[in-house]
Length: 126
Length: 126
DNA sequence: ATTGTTACTATACAAAAGTATACTAATACT
DNA sequence: AGTATTAGTATACTTTTGTATAGTAACAAT
Image (cartoon, rainbow over all chains, first blue to last red; front, side, top):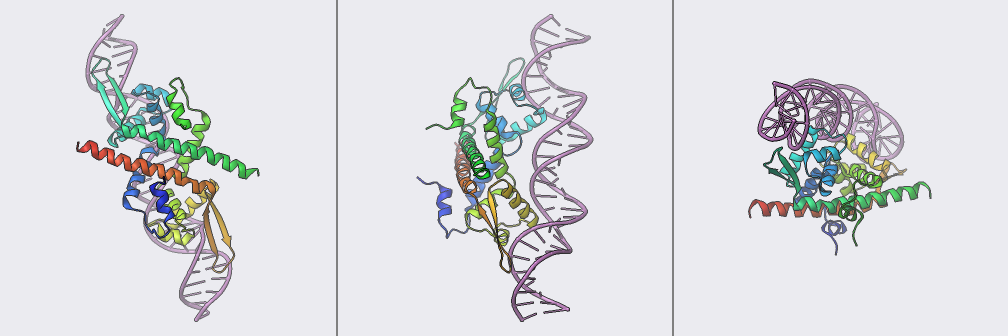
């Protein structure tokens, strides 16, 4: 079964990309671009969900950036912030369904990246 | 068949992402991030391969940015620059195999983006 | 009263990415 | 000699993104 975008590209008469496609692609880009987004999402996938866990797991990230990125991921519906009223306070960042599904995107990116490296090697020394 | 990254995440004992995975992901991010990369790649997929075509096809891009991005895509092995010695000179930017394969990444991003919008709608008005 | 813990915020700054506007080189056509 | 065409480059600037460093709030334990 062929996907939307491949169908679209196959049809040579198509002149313009539908607006909703552009919106969807922009959303995805916003969620994965930046220096810290993928490390944070990967850490959350691994089950590191507290602020301190993330800070320890992601080398050299400052609390300012971690806080900023988590907020952005929250308003974009990628993570959910859960507060447990203990002492000291416990706060967990949990991936939403959409957040978990990002693994498909990451995975395709990984596949392409690996294949691209093989391709470049092949062409450099034929 | 399950992919590399999904396998990795399933194994809870895994503590660190292999270096080559990080490199591959970084490569992919570098190729698709920025305001103009996807529009340029999409235009090239559609068969718009001359500088002027791209300039007309991509609204509001300046020649400086187009030139800069094309150069970057070239050194990263995504496009190939072909010079035809005519008058006026004809220069074509052609996607490499890796460049064409980016459609898989774009497509997965599109799928996720569309599904995410449906998910957000569902949660906003339950 | 001091120290420890978690989860941050505030301020100032540096670097990267993108924009605006004008200009150039090579060639051919009139 | 002046104009058109393609494919860019040059310079100065603004905006966005990320860094460095220090400080805060709410408790509890000693």
